[in-house]
Image 1 (cartoon, helix red, strand yellow):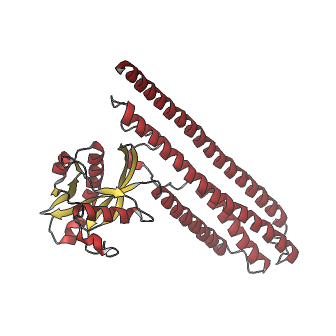
Image 2 (cartoon, one colour):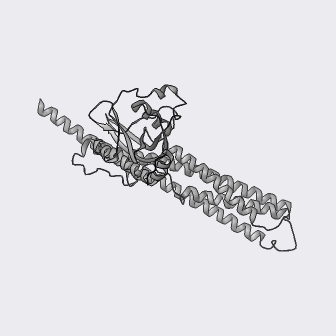
Length: 359
């Protein structure tokens, strides 16, 4: 009976591995297919814009600097309609690329989730520890996109179209050939598109996380002290305060709420410092951590939280080395190290703000 049970367990383990690998292959193929769609869409748009602008230059080259100060109204109408249609197509392309980026992030998270499950259930030797091929390290998980991607390329092309429309408007009314207004139109339109894409990117990244937490620091006798707590279900384990994202709460608000509930300390997020992913009770936990500072006003939105310590855990303020030694998990130690490194750069400013004369 025991032998048969063992065989079924081995079969179940093998089937689980095969399922995870099959899902990973499917996600991997879908990921690159989605990337290719974005590349092709952008290339087509660039080609279309280049062709239209080339035709426009050929149309205007005999008029600029000639005897006519204005373009015929019929020609202006055709140009404006054509460029407006092209701009509308460009804006749609921009939204499609932003959506494509969101889908890409989802594929990355799902693939990371499969790796996390594989490490948790099957990698007893720890070979896959810290393995994130698409994102480098846990500190870079969910990082915002840098300037230079497909989104920004499309935004540049849209801005060129807008600047050409401004130029045509100025030229058709005989205002002149000053480059100031077209350049301003280009810069302004690019900034608006960049800011909009950035906001959606940040919102999409934040939507990937299931939890948020914080590393709360305070200066004491010219030394940084960090707040750590015992785990909810195991008072022998020391962790950083964190918890579930609820409803439409932002990650920053979640971190502040969880710190208050678990420690009784009111704190507000200063800046993001790192991200982690692991398995707890078969649940995939994806956490964004923030560097945090104590605050008497961060809980004004929810006075009930200001009572703090609702979970009655042990808490302690420790110097960096002591906190690092106390923390149970390696991922928590890494987040603490990232916070400590960032805090060191802000140390003198923090000391001055608290009135301590430390250098």
